[in-house]
Amino acid sequence: MTRAFAPGKCILFGEHAVVYGQPAVAVSIESGVEVSISESNRWVLEGMPFESSRHPHISHILNSVFKYSGPPLEIEIKSGLYSAAGLGSSAALSNAMGAALQELVSPDENLDLVSLARIGHSAEANAQKGRASPTDTATSALGGCIVVSGNPIPGTKHIFESTLETPEGSRKWSISRVEIPKIEDVWLVLGFTGVGSPTGEMVEGVSELLKSNPLKMAEIEAIGEITSSGLSALSSGNMEEVGLAMNACQDRLRNIGVSSPELENLISATEGHSLGTKLTGAGGGGCMVSLTRNPQRVAECIEIAGGRPLISRFGSGGARIIVQEN
Ligand code: PMV
View (tube, rainbow, N blue to C red):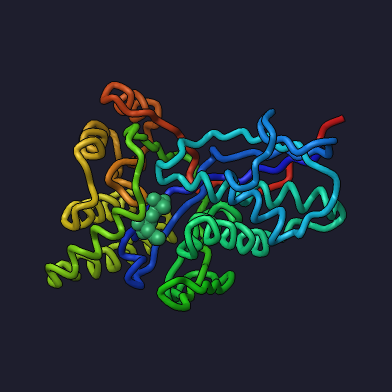
């Protein structure tokens, strides 16, 4: 049997603006998805017969990426992420599946995280009609703090370029890493509103807004500038400044109409105990995130306000094979 884990992600800065060429910054979180695979005499997923058309990420990895032709497999998935919540659960599933399968078919090869990020991205793109940014899959595969942008960003370590043929033409992204000083006393607390986040609808809503009111492009540019200051604050480990940049980002996200009453409820419940707090991901529902030195208190505030909290250390690791203990 082989087992692999891939983490979820949290966008700290730049959601929506990244669609218009601005940079986005995401960090991996501690919770994620674990996939176990073993050879079997029939195809099984989670104890049920595996129907490949119902699981596009998994079947893409098996058939298109690995061209798997070995014995049937029994696949088990354990997820610690809320789904449709902006935490990158499908990217984590794709990456964990890719890593576990690679370990099964080539146990002597080391796991190459850039190749894994590309595999995960191709699975996401295949499942989303050719439209997927590499943010979730790259952050989940590589771990730590990742910047995705149209062009390389000075002060970051360039890792790889990613291209994708989309229905709107060819798109290209530059993926880099931000080295952040070791941060021991600051946590991320995610708060799930319980409402699914409809990414496609939210992206379309922003596009309609910009068409009807081109002056709103100033908000997108402002998010780009806030992202750059947030990035320098992160690189120098100035978490107070990071928090302020998160708050400033939330003001702009409100102005482009992607917040929601449920998100605002959790954001105001946690403000008093946070260095910064904002929605994370596409908005309209999904999760907010608080940067805090008091994670238990913030988690309590989220629960009291009706949300579901998830505490994570800041910038934890990426995808990995779980070694079996005999
Ligand atoms: O909800 P998520 O985690 O898929 O985040 C979407 C981020 C957007 O910027 C809104 C869309 C995108 O493709 O980058």
